[in-house]
Length: 240
Image (tube, one colour):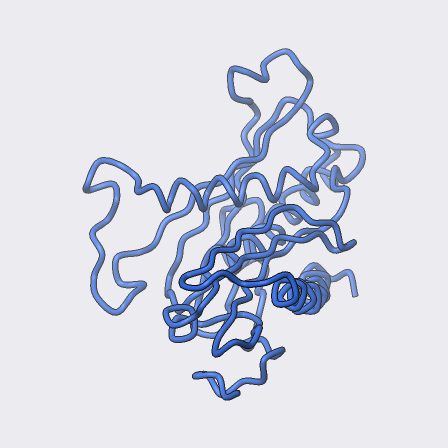
């Protein structure tokens, strides 16, 4: 089976995670999955949402957006329309859930970290690139809080990353670009921790249902991809 990208079924696109790209953010990372480029920044706020006041716990949340010319034709800014799309809300909630899954909010204290994910260029897998880059940005922001003495220990239980898988021509494939995603029989996103824990799986048959064997193969590929992304995250953070 030949993928439109020419890659082997288990091959990812070239991935780079470039830390510290934003001058003013407490943490930042430019995540590139092939031609998908997402700028992730982390901002620390010494306050929490009202529902967490006086609890001693912190919060991690995310916002996501696509720049007007991140795609082949110009997309109107959502701010100009006066509302976010359902897709935007779904993706930013996914990013927030993914990061909170590996953050000890009780150790964070009553402060909030906001992650902003801006898609500079889209070629499939923007949400997975956003999750993977956001973890690097979050880690860097928490490192800064630790190095300045505002936190005694780094409040992270594990790392987290995300990768897409799909079924194309009856074959499970890893890390779909747009050409593959638009033709896939099944589209799936896997969010896993560096230790192998499952945070979230989104999988949808675009046509005929898929069976358990194909799902297991997608999960196997996802674990392979997450292992590679975890190594790249650690390298970006200077941990390897």
